[in-house]
Length: 104
Image 1 (cartoon, rainbow, N blue to C red):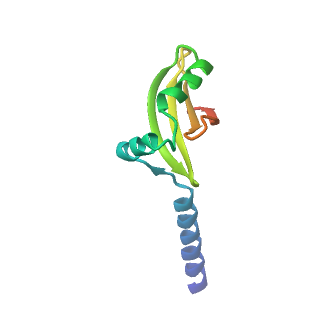
Image 2: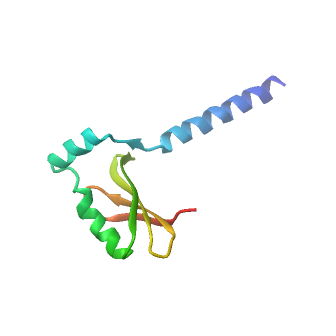
């Protein structure tokens, strides 16, 4: 019985460590403004142009600046003209689209 409890505790701890390691850090608006002024990241408006060209007529629902595995990423949600929601991740330093998927 004791070894089974230790196994469960170890499994729970491993899951917690993996979950914490996979989370992104949200940057607040002051930090985003500082990074933009320093030229570390591109302006969101500039990167949105590429996303909107991909989905003409789309509306911006949400945009956040995050740090994921030492990469600064804009996470953007768009409502397309067809009524679907797309989640895009844009490299904030280069503008490259890292992810584009249909939101559930």
